[in-house]
Image 1: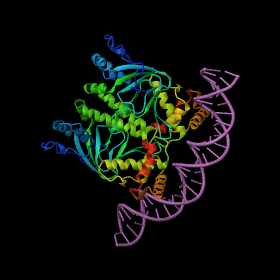
Image 2 (image 1 turned 30 degrees about the horizontal axis):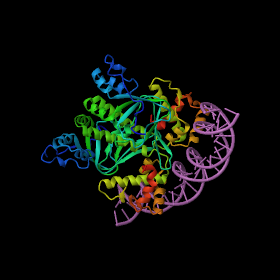
Image 3 (image 1 turned 120 degrees about the vertical axis):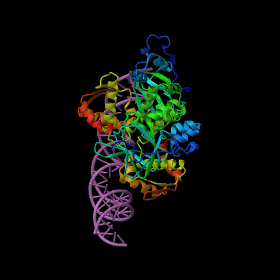
Image 4 (image 1 turned 180 degrees about the vertical axis):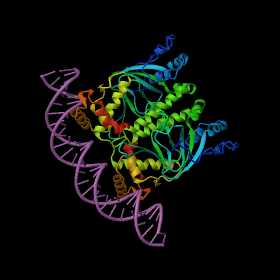
Length: 251
Length: 251
DNA sequence: CGCTAGCTTGAAACCGGTCAACTTTTGTGG
DNA sequence: CCACAAAAGTTGACCGGTTTCAAGCTAGCG
């Protein structure tokens, strides 16, 4: 209800852990990016003190709500986060799903408050970065500034992805392919997915009726492209699925 | 063909114009923002040397093309720019229209090349900002960094706007309202619009068939909400138009 | 055991796309 | 200046995919 991204705040054990800067939260996109940039340990430590591990948030718990004052972005460390807004009729528009390693809150910068709600779909833990602090650090560390620009710029392109005029099947395929890639980038199987979200969530994300999502899964299964068992999906014909998604993913 | 955003390059007369930093390209979003931030003249001059006025581009001329190396963002000074991609079937997906004061190229940062084409819809002049240079300056000038973050973050939200599941009439209304606001923010009439783009462009932007755009205009006119005469639109009932657009614009 | 939320399936209505014909405007060259 | 051609825009008829409404199914949980 009050300040967002606050549940279960606990300090990172960074300061105590001087000998090994690589303890630094391994799932955070920043840390990986910064290591690639060849940061030295003192720089990493500087970044590390901005980080706060928060959570766990229980399934259904809100991480922030529309209108909350923006103070921090956060990387998902565990679980899945859904961001959404409610339109005038009370219908939910899902803006995105965020898996471990992905960043929530980037769209809040321009207005200094969150333009959407964020809710945990399962048990969620976050890495919280104070935005004023990270922006100040970015001014000193060009690589970090570049990384932030890059993250923001990526999201512009992503949002345009679903804006097109696509069929229900194409949308479903693109959704599954994107999920598969993100999971495999994190070291998980690219063919076996577990969906943290309901059919209705998927429908609200893809701008379809939940019945259409249901039928879509059935059609994909009948075509021998996936095997669906409730929220567990096995992609049995990745190339055909990719072919269906090609229009949306632009390849 | 070769390097993008290059036509008719001519140096700004900045250096010669020491006495008056406020000659600084008045339509650029940056300059306005920086003035608000209370920049002193030396700072403004520092920003100014990054700026290159380019153009004019003739109607139909490309400013950059998909895949071109990204080196600069640009503010529109005059005219209207359309950005688009071609999908697998060769259909055009319009990503946005950019009026004077608006910035093109922000979505290119993440990949270091332009992910879309940009074409002049009429006679277009630009303010070109070398991105490496402006990023370097942003590190020294916190207000500028903040401004860049803000611009990027805004675009994330905008892109999500049209992603929803809306009717043709709602899309048309939202398109006109957005255009009206952007024009009036620049000091032009909020009720009389001149469209630089064809019906087909609008259709490709709103993800409709051009016939649907045509019918949409007819319906809006029959309802007494607008008066349409080719590309000149008069909004005769702004409140009703706003009501129709409300779902999309979230108010 | 029975409740509830999530999910699936069927039938009908509807919105927008496609195809086609036509009108209007713009631009070009004789 | 006119004639012609090409592009842009409008309108009508039909078709198809999605939504909507409705009914039933399934799994999980008190």
